[in-house]
Structure formats: structure tokens, C-alpha cells
Length: 493
Image (cartoon, rainbow, N blue to C red):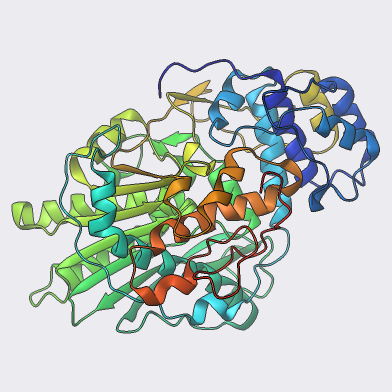
């Protein structure tokens, strides 16, 4: 990132109020009013869209909160770190509100929705062109790469969405996942995590824990392809994993390089299964896979960054120059490690980092440093109000009472822009500002639908109905499909 301009006070104020709205503060008028008194009303800017308070998340808010929200500009969706690091409100206070808000939205168990699980994804993945070492600033030929490899990106991403949709059915019914046509489920890799919104899931060996599927190992014997698919955040406990952004240098499979602690805890549970599959399918006497893909979305892309690094390292150790090239397609990946790790990753892994321009997730964790947060009372007067309301943040200052953690973005970026959408491209610039009263639909559109929409045009024609492109009302007979749950009255449409 280049030099950062100071974020306006209104942007930081709006982000904090966004978390206040998402956290359902309406039943807590005293705490809400305390925050409003501290933050003030702010001032509207004629050059920036204001916050529209008519959205569903604001329907039951009190008049003072609506007044405060309406008085600040809608935050810019592509300036997350400017707001977090340079605003007048402490980073840990903002982070605590956002973490609490996101955890609160995940309080209900994931739903069993068979719609995505049952769909047949057309096309097939193909080996990625080896473009190592990866460019730090992104590919100059991104358009050409999309033309060449876009079908592979789409197939992998839609397979990930099917896998993510399956989790609710696993929790509710113990269902098995049906892999894509022509593929077999070679193995399901599980993680043990604190029980949260997962009633019905198998209990872990430790009281208060559950065992959930987190990565699928897929094998296509005819094409001799292996895919490691790592899902994204689906439970309240997994938001805690996301926010555990302190670093560890104690993972041998990652060369003991500093990486995101939460992602590393998931990686360490998955890696033995991935390594065993590589031994059996790739390194065996009669290899059944000559092409290896690693793919992940969101949290899964952060973990997938580590899995792809370890997989390529291990294959190189075993086979040297004859080792197959691991193709990593990482969709909306948060930053996963230090500059030391990223330097090594860019040399080692043939990755594609896909990021929609208005998705906030790939902007975390901030570079070049992400301030740490200590346990206990949050800082300052705002922190005192939050602490009194029972709001806290995952501590990130250990080991060693570190004040900030160095982060860097992996190379190989392909930025997906609004004018690249397969259908309804004119509606997508509305996401350039986060309308706080529609923050959940905003997250679904920017973090889920955007990737399917942009990539669907590179897939076979049969994929058109899976585009998730339409934000405005879809005309009768128009190709494509709507982004689920998107409100057609979102401001700016």
C-alpha cells in the first residue's frame, strides 16, 4: 500500500455505529446513547453519500441512533485500513465492536439449504500457467489470465459455495456431502472448535467442543486431479479464529515463518490429512493425481494460503524439480502472514489472489502493521463504555506483549471490478459505500455474489444461471440470477 491519507472522523464514527447497528443495540438504549454522546453527531459531507437509515437493520432503532447514523457519510468500502488505523477512534475499540457484531449475526446455526449443495457446476478445472515468482503488485495481464483461467476459478469457487452450504445440513442432519460430478470425496478433514451455534454437531473429545468438516479432499481419477477445498467462516467460534491475528513462528511445515495465529491453528488440524493425501495420491508408486489445486474462500482462503505453501514445500522436498506445481486459487483472502512469509510464498506458490474491489475482507489484516489489542478493559472513554456493555475483543498482544504485528499481502492479485460483472454491471457501483442499515446484504453481495458474478462469464453457458449478478430487479427472460437476499431498494441503485 502507498502512503495512507488520514481517514475522516465521520468514517471512523460511521464504522463504529455500523457495528452498533449490527450488534442489535436497539434493546440497550443506555449503552447506545452513551456511545452517541461520546461520538457526537458528526457532520454530513456534500461530496459523500450520507447514511440512509431506512434499511432493515435500522427498522427498530431509536430516533437518536437514526439521527446519528444519518449525520455521517456512508463509509468507503475500499478504505477499511484507513478507517481502522488513522481514524480518531482506537483500532481496538472499532475491532471489538465489529467482532461482537459479526459474532452476534452468527448466533443462529447455519441453515440446511440444499439449493447450492445440489447444483451441478459446469466445466472443469485446468492447470494454471506457472507464473512464479508472483508479482507483488498484481498481474499486468490480469484480463488475459481471466480469459485463460477464468473457467477454473469459477468451477473452484462454486464448488466452495456448495461445500459451505453443506455445513448446515451436516449439523442439522449429519448429511454426507455430494461432490461434483466426475469427482469423488477422497476425504473430509475436520476441525475441533468451541461449541457455539452448532447444536447437533458431533461433540469433540474436550467438553464444550464440536467437530466440524472444514476441508474436502476431492479426486478426479480420469483427469488425475486433486483439489483441497477449504471453506470460509460459518460459526460464531470461527469469527474468533479470524480475529486471532497475533502471529506464531512455531509451525515447522510453514518454515517457522510468522503467520496469523488463528489460521495456523486450523492449518495444523488440516495439514496431517492433506500430507497423507499427497503421499497416497501424488507421491505413491502409482500416482493417481498429477495436478494439485488448493482453493479457499474468506477464512478458507487465509488457511488455504498456508496449505498451498506447505503442500508445495512438501512436494519439493520429496521430488525436487520433478514436483508438480500446486495451483492455488484464493478467493477474498485476508492477509495471512508477515513480509518474511510472503516473500517466501511469492517465490514458492503459483497462486491467484482474487479480490473484489469493494470487499472489505481482503483488506484485512492491515499492512504494514496491524496494532495488537490487550485483554481486559478496552482503551479510553469509548472503551470504557464498550467494556461496561460487555463488549470485548480477542486479545492479540501475545506472545511477548507485542504492540503491532507486521502483515503483507501475497502476490498474484487479480482485482475484480464493477465494470467486469457479467450482468447488471450498472448496479454494482452502489457497493462503493457501505450503507450501514443494509450491512448484512452488503457483506453477502460484496463478499460472496461478486465473485460468482464476475467469474461466471468465463464458464460454460450453462453456468449463466449461477451468476448471482442481479442487484436490481431482473427483467423477465434476462440471463443470470439474483444475489440472494439483496434488497432492490439499496441506496444508490
